[in-house]
Amino acid sequence: MTAQPARPGLISPEPFKPSLVRAVFRDVTPMHVSRSATWAAASVTRTVLTEIIAGARRAAAEEARKKLIPRDLISAIDRNVEVQVGNTWYGYSPTFKDLNGVQYDAEGVIVLPPKRSRSRRPSAVAGAHRFEAGVKKLLRNQGVTAVPAMVRDLDGIASVFLTDLARDAAMVVREGGIKGFGTVTLGTSVEPAPAPAFKDFLGVLSTRSGDARTIGRDDILAATTIQLFGDIRQQALAEAREATQSYSPTHLLAGPPTEEEIIDHPTVTG
Image (cartoon, rainbow, N blue to C red):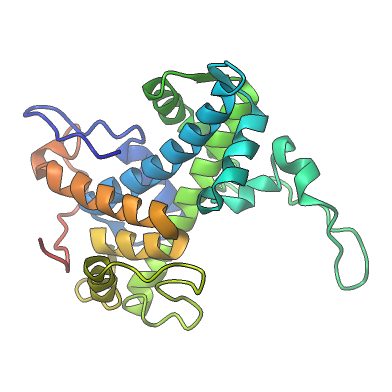
């Protein structure tokens, strides 16, 4: 799946709006977020959710259904380990309750599931409902609907994934690239060696230069290499780069920019 080029006079068709993406980043970091970073984050999140919905749709089709139910989500994740994202959500969702098992601490006491945050700043879980409109658009794009419980799970996964992506992007900025993470590698022992062009691309992302107070597009791409692996990582990176190259700055936002919507100067060209 590739991002559709924008026609003159239109804004990007990404299902997750810039205002939503910026709100998630504000919950995570005080750093500025460039316009291209906003659209890259929206694109990566869309890629991940699209892949999950596609897997669930295939599971439902085996039973001649076009309405997705929670067990279709479990089936999609079981069939494709690469889409096991938003893990924090699983502790909150009844869909995954029986799959998590009982956890014990060092004293042998049962660890209860985390409670929803009551802080004034909503957590990724408490704010998951904000993703409903985008999730429903993605469902329509694939010609399916979903029961409310399934929509809730997709909302939660999208919210947690984007929040984790924002945290990692902020960390990339603070650390000056992904090379500084001792426990983070550009691949795993079970993955095939990346293609030369892709390997070179990851090498460019290993260091960064520029404004240390601004999250740019390439910081989102670097965070994507931390969050995802395998084919979906390469797909998400390719689609995010295409999305940010397809839309001119005048089409990136509907309306005049705010003080936080500064112009990005990416460290990777091309």
